[in-house]
Every structure is written in structure tokens, then in C-alpha cells.
Length: 355
Length: 173
Image (cartoon, rainbow over all chains, first blue to last red; front, top):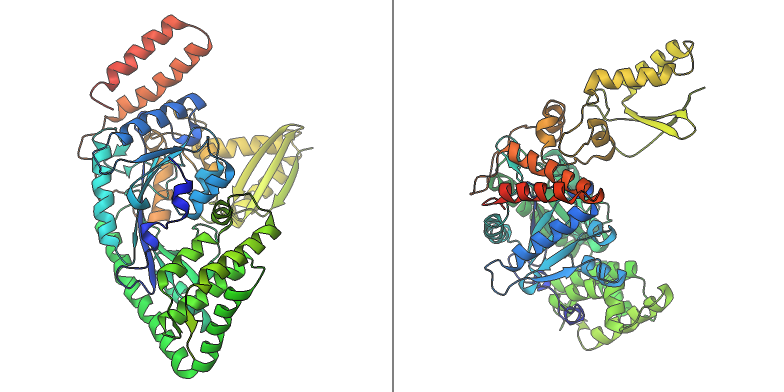
């Protein structure tokens, strides 16, 4: 499949629609599954990993889903293309950076993907725009059922779905909701929220998962426990806590608007001005400024510009996306200049600051 | 003389109890032989004290103490399917094959309790009955034998093993 055709559009999950889309970017669920008859990926020989990949690829491509999956083998991809898939959240950094036979099957609108030979033989992922955990669960449950009819999963009555790492054993399910929380960051209340979440065993991570920083004020909230609780119970816990966090963020936004409207307006307008006129932009500064603009739009401080374009820019200004858009590999300095040029062209067509 | 170095490392569980391991000891047994231990403060103190007391006993004193300690706790038994030892899992954090959950069940139970607060699955299960544990384990072993046979160019054995794999997989995969 041609990855370049994906560059222009953004995945379904970045549409900027769906319930509570001003704060909830996306909902995502992944299931870890392994084939019963093979060692786990890390202990499988090169030959076995080949077998695992061939078997799974063949079974997945024959699944009764419309449209059928596209399969991308990772060993045949350039590092740039692998990074591109990471930036789109279709594969993990671990899969991108590991070696040997491995790949990813991509479903319609990039909402479904199946990573093969990651830490586990299969990692199924479903992603949706906005706060839609239930819909994501329905999709992934159905997909898991379909695959299970064609392969034999490693499963025990006692421990559930068996995984390479005991932190995933049981349901093998990690459900996460990605939130944009700029006001809680500005009011410095975000730490309090994290501490409360950790107490109820929920993890908080940055935009690109484990170990990544929360750039652009994006945070992923996910479950840690996979053993001893049903999928429904885990989803319910997350579903119940998210509205509380949304409530805190809204309250912080209201406080900012009420108590420091002028300072906030200035901040948002400066961010927008810089994005539209700077000639060198690092990825980090871009994330920070886009976050302020996104907040400004949601608070009605900026006009004539929509959330979807800002969501898109968060991804399209990442290093691999930018280089694919420009059609050439660029070093750091060239990237910063190309990024600024791209932002100027996209934002000048759109938007104006509210006076 | 055996040499001990203490250094900080990423979060890990103590090998002797289930507290956070805060001390990581590398035993240098000879020029190219190392042994790594990950212990919590309490167990490390005990270990170092014991090592010191044994220190006078000769060159291999500490190494022997380590081996004894390890054997006492986990044994050196390994999974017959994938060959992994529990100590290897401790170091890498990854198991070798599905069968390990049975082979190291006793060692894993406290770990699972620690991570999840529970030790028994509750939730979705495959609608199709999975192969029984024994078949799973046999298949993994057969694949190992197949690989060996091919390496040794023993094609008769390879063909026999392959037939058996096919037989087991019929109606399975």
C-alpha cells in the first residue's frame, strides 16, 4: 500500500468530532494476543517469527471485514516511513525500532490496526474520535472474535489471555482516552489530577505513550490492571472518571476566562501570530503554540478557524510527516524552516484573531 | 577476588522478596563471566553481609553464595518448551512462551498479586476452546526439534516432526 496517499488526509480519530471533542481528542483500546503454538516474539527464532508473520498476515487478510485490511511489512520500510506510522499512532515505537519480520495491518480510515510480532504476536488496536470508549470496545471485540475463529490464542482459564509481559495478562486490554488539558496546565492544577488518578490505579502518559512527555498539553489516561477485572468493569472505571477531569478542565477554563481574560487573549493571539509569521519553528514550540490556539478557538477567542485543521497540524508538523509532505528528507534546521513555511501557508488561508 | 559494583538502575522488583529493587549488584566471576542481582535494601544488606562472612572461604565464596541463594529461591529449573529460566525472566521482564505461566506458576502468583491485586482472570474468553496446555507445550517443543533437525540436515527427522505438527494443528490453528 502507498503510505504517501495517507499524508494529505488525517486519520478518522483526528476529525475533531465526537462527544466532548473540545477536550477529548480520541478514545483507543488495544488487545494483546498470542498464538498458542509459538514462543513469544522475543524468544522466537527468526524462522519462527517469519512463520508467525506469514500465518497472521494470511489470516488477517482473509477476515470478513469491509473494506479488507491492507498489510504493511515493516522490514521493507524506510526509517522515515516507520516514524510516519508512529506519528499517526498506527504502530508503537517499539515495533518501529525493533528488527526482524514484523508488520501492521491497517483497516478503514486508520481506525483499526493490528501490529504483528510486537512484544506480543498480535496487538489489535481500535481508535475513535472523541469520548467513544463503548463504540471502540464494540469494534475491537468483534474484530477479536473474527480473528479468534481463524487462529488459536494462548489462553488459560486461570490467567486469561497469556502475554509476554505479566503486566498485560488477563484481558490483555489497555483502554485509553486522550485529553487536551491546557487550562489545567496553565492553572498548575494538573498535578493534583494525576495524583488522584494514580490512587485509583489509572496511568497518565503523554501523546506518544510510555515515557513520552506531555507535549501540546495532551494526556492519555489508561488502565493499568488487566487481571481480575472484566473488560466492562475496567471501561466503566475510565468512563466514570473522564467526565470529572473534563469538569475540572472546564472549570479551569472558566476561571481563566473570568479572572485573566486579557492575559489569556494576549497569549492566544501571540501564539496564533507567531504560527502565522515565524520563519523557523521547532516541533516543540509548534506543539505549545498550537495548544494555545486550540484553547483559544474553544473559548471563542479566535474566529474563522476550526478545530479539525489544528488537530491535523499537530500531526502534520511532526518530523516524518513534514518530510513526507515536503517530499524530501530534511535535516533539523531545514525542517524548522519547512515547518514554519508550512504553518504559514496553512494558517494564512484560515482564521483571524478576535479584536 | 570477586568484585562487586553497586549501581542504580530502572525500576525492578527484588529477586528475593517483592519490594522494589533498589540495589543492583554485578558479580564479576571471571574476566568474561558476570552475574546480576537485583535486590531491595533489606535483602541486599543481608546478601552483602553473608558474602562478607563467606569472603574468607576462598575465591569462589561469593559466587557460590549467589548460586545457593538463587537455587534456594527459584531453582534453576527451566521451561521444557522454550528453555527460559525464571532468573532470565527476572532480568528481562518478558516470559518466553505461553507455557511459562504453568511452569513458573508459583513464582508468578505473588508477582501478579503485586501488579494487579488479583491472580485470577475474569472477563472475555475465546469462544472456541483453546488447545489444552499439553498440546500447546508439545507444539512449541516440536517446533524446536524441527529447527534443530533442519540445522543438522536430518531431513527424515524433520519430515516426521513436521507431520506430527500438522497432525496436532489439524482443526487447531
